Image (cartoon, rainbow, N blue to C red; front, side, top):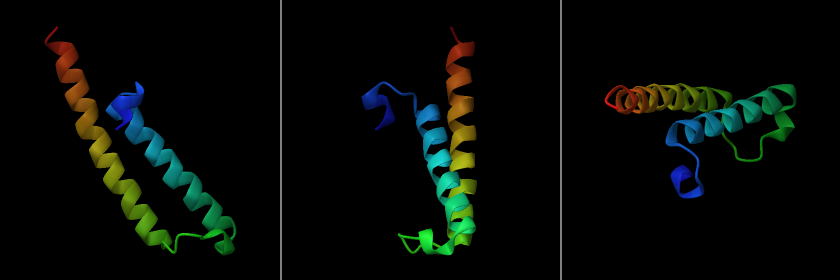
Length: 68
């Protein structure tokens, strides 16, 4: 969906990672900030998954650049 708005998939993934990181920081500062009932561990797993996706997208993006 990121590309629909003119943002690369890689950058879109980084944006989602930053959303998760900010959410994590807010919940750690004050557990009352948890409005989606997602544990700290779940959020960290999401960040790890987004990191793996970002690696794949980065490689794909650079592979396209190498073939030009």
